[in-house]
Amino acid sequence: MEERKVIRELLDSKQYTRLRQMLSELNDADIAALLEEMEEQDMLKVFRILPKDLAADVFSYMDVDNQQFIITSLSDRDAANIVDNLMADDAADLMEEMPANVVKKILANASPETRRDINHLLRYPEDSAGSIMTVEYVDLKENLTVDEAIARIRKIGVDSETINICYVLDSRRKLVGTVALRYLLLSQPDEVISDIMHENVISISTMMDQEEVARQFQKYDFTAMPVVDNENRLVGIITVDDIVDILQEEATEDIEKMAAIVPSDKPYMKTGVLETWKKRIPWLLLLMVSATFTGRIIASYESALSACMVLSTFIPMLMDTGGNAGSQASVSIIRGISLDEIRFYDLPGVIWKEARVALLCGVTLSAANFVKLMLFDRVAVQVAFVICITLVVTVFVAKIVGCSLPMLAKKIGFDPAVMASPFITTIVDALSLVIYFQIATVLLQF
Image (cartoon, rainbow, N blue to C red; front, side, top):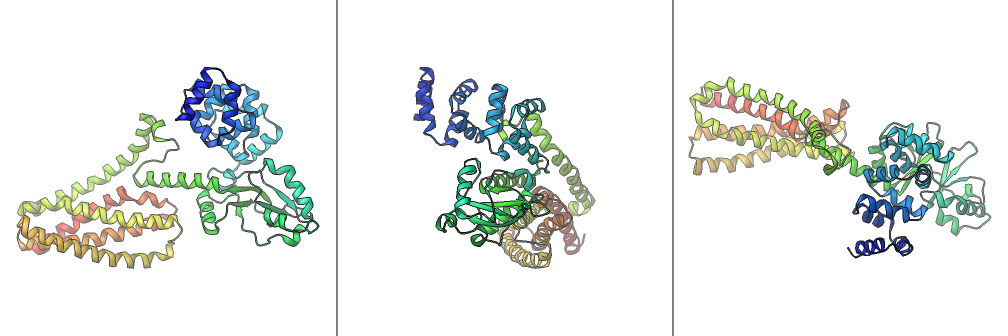
């Protein structure tokens, strides 16, 4: 709050030199946050005051809408300078969001190296490792001495994403090892890189899905990983800051799918009403149509309901309990699949576990419900038995459906998140009604 006030005062009094000095002492992300709280024209004015290198770093932390506003407001040369000073992966992400005519003008004024790096990244499929990697890294030849390697790091390290890990290449640019900067600093100046490098390199393919890339980072606890092509040639690296963005993106996508919403890449407050409607209505229509089966089931058992009207009172409770039980199982399984803790060959074990859990849950719910039916609802004992037995069977079926459908979806190539609450609830609702009326027909002899 205090910083915003000072910036406002310096801006109003046109003390631009002091303002530049003050901003230079702040963290890049904090400057970006301050800029995004300003009116657009003030944001642009302050952004122009920033030194070029700092401006590019701050720019990378801003959201897409503000990035587009700034880029389109700057001259072609100034916009190209910003892109030239961005990391290649951030520049490629920006190009993907920009209108084609703006991209064309920016690339026309950008340096040849920037154009080459951006085009290199843009050719990879969306959400692949190649599309999110950066080509700014430190590579070393295996025959260099430690002294020569440190000299190279001093030369190219300032433009690299990270220098903590350096990647060792042979004469054909194949990745043969890695060496940490601390080992270089602790080694003798005349030692050869091939003698001190770590040869057991964990790498990822350019075509690997970004969700699998995130799992690899989690598995090995790395801060950066090399990306290689099908001939094991180093083409880039992915750093942990990119993985944080991926995890947020994938989690958001799964949550939206589990709520029967078509995933969106825009923040909620920046998504228009019509666009939000388009994202939500397809699944709502599908679920509404599928729910008509529930009405047909009730209509087909109209004679049973007319013979014992009290049965209709407990339909919502049975359907809701079944839907909730199925959702519990599905969410647990979907989470396990996303963390790579559950594979398809685990299906028998998962079903066996959920069957036992379902039996315990069903019996507990039925016992509690039986007491309620006898003391408060005061229904006939036969009706209470019908409701309680239905509850046990419904919970059992719901949990089996809830645990198996996401795994089957994953096996045949669908996103398991699609088989979450709304979809499973619709299926379980229909099954619980069939179970209810079948048990009622047998026990009450309609």
